Amino acid sequence: MVPPLGPIISGYATRYSWRLTFWVGLGISGVFLPLVYCLPETYAPIIKKKHRVDPEAAEKQQPSFARELKVIFLRPFVMAARKPVVLFTSLYLALVHATLYLFFQAYPIIFQVGVYQLSSGEVGLTFLPITAGSIVALGLFLGYSSYHSSAMKAGIV
Image 1: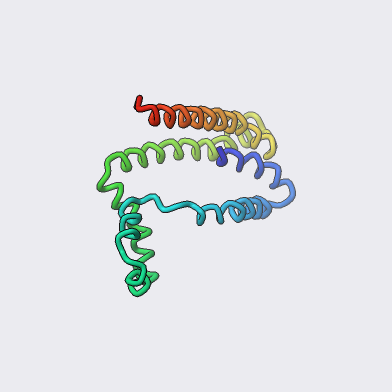
Image 2: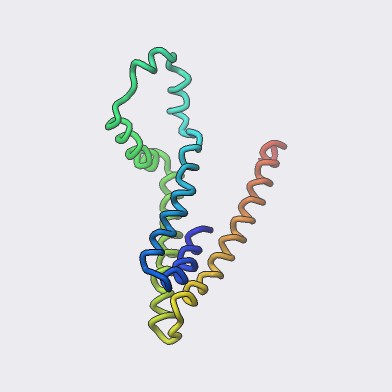
């Protein structure tokens, strides 16, 4: 839902300064970055490991920062190699996002440089249908997620 909003905001921000587009992105990222640190750990081996080790031993065996970075950056590749559902979901989402970002590159060429000669702000508005589609998809996903949770509790699924 958020990526299509970037060109809409940036199209009008470039009227004032090309640097403003980056400052707006930094501000939005700065607002949402703390939320990442509030996310709970969901990787089962890590959760099991935390419950298995007694608290005194855990304090003594703190891994080094380099070891933590290695684990953090290698974990997605290990999961993709061991679990086909992770691999194929990642490939599918890569294709979807590649298509979306190709739109981001093609729209200005088509609508600003090409036949239509629209301004930067007007080119940004051409992303409104993608944004609307993202909002509709989010609504459908939330509705299905609620339905699926209810079905799981009822034992249907």
